[in-house]
Image: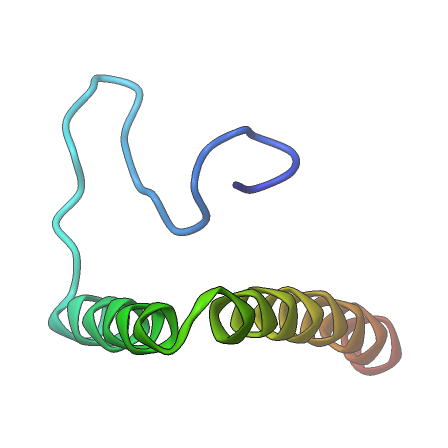
Length: 74
């Protein structure tokens, strides 16, 4: 869940309620992410938990790095 808005990260809806068409690239990335989740879950709860933690850490560090670079570069 995205912390500020309470909606899943990457969900796109307009105020009128019409869903926005997702790109093929976005659909492929989501399918790959879902497949990775299924494979990790098949290995057991420990593997899935590690994946969840790893993805959360990557998201936060990438966000922090992006903000740093944005502040430096303009």
